Image (spheres, rainbow, N blue to C red):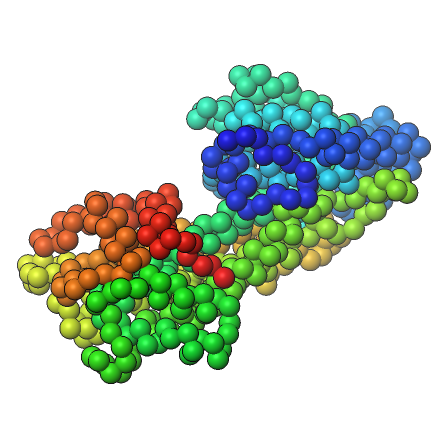
Length: 511
């Protein structure tokens, strides 16, 4: 694949996933280079003229009233990075850490940050050559941006800290040396240009969002298999019913389910076997649809944030001025990523209920726990336990981080967003949801076999075939975690959605 050109204006969620997970390389647009050069000249002039501008000729936070002399500017920037690199906990995954650097680059190239072109090029070389900073995932308040994580991102550029290179965790200087990338010395304003922004929360949240958009499709696929296994009443999917309450996600889900089930001989209509299904089937357009609407709200905000300037002060070339404001504050993303976590968790909530309806003989006419040898065999009994545990954990994780705030910097920074916590939690929730949906796929296919398959729909047949490619119908008890792992892997690698969409002749709708 050819390099993705970075302009600062049009980075997409799909490009983030390609660069961070598939190691697609990047390059700067010529316009972006000129923006950086012009912005840097303003900073150099401000320093030469000894104008008082926050973070350039002053200290930081509570020290904003301490004026820094021209000969102290370099020390100020290095000290900012080394003292702020105080993260905690496990490191961010490699894809998230790469995203932190990518999004910071995309912020800087807009030409409002006053950084040098050679500093940005160092970051591009690191991204393209696979040098990834060791960035602890905890320790950010989400305002003044992601100070601690972003400072850890910068350390290897200075020959400090730790970094991954070719699968090995190394001292930062050694990783840079092996990759053939010279380390740098920061100049005026550069430390602040690198560590003041929302890129850690936005990277973690963006990748969680990317996964959530796939999970919206998988949830509809799993739901449709449960319709097959339960002789589901498709009358509840009639477009007229949804047209009179036209939430876009609800409409999309109903259309998806009808397309997935087209041609099925297992589903029923109202009154044929029963008048109505339980909510987990009958109301799935409304439930899945609400999650679709919420996820798309988050997508709109992420698309703004990934192409925005979020540092401080912001340099304006027109009047050669640096204005100190609050674009680093993570509140817009904190609320968004809290909403993302809540929306995605609901996909697992209703999925677990559909699993329960399949394995519990009180709720269906299927054999208890979907085993033909109940008693000596437990079948899928404990699969529901595991799903319930993950769903319950998600309920704890979905508590909003953004409702909390702890003042910092001696009260100068008296409201913070906790947006990075919100983003991390959303990612963890998405992983749990993926596991529950994997269980639903497996259980629903067993339910279809136990009922006696009269003929699946166009989309459900493709999903069933892919599951059955590696997961045999359960007759005698066996280890099930491997089967669940396989079902999770076909979700994670995209092969499930790809197979179903090919069968349908078009994309499953997410809005």
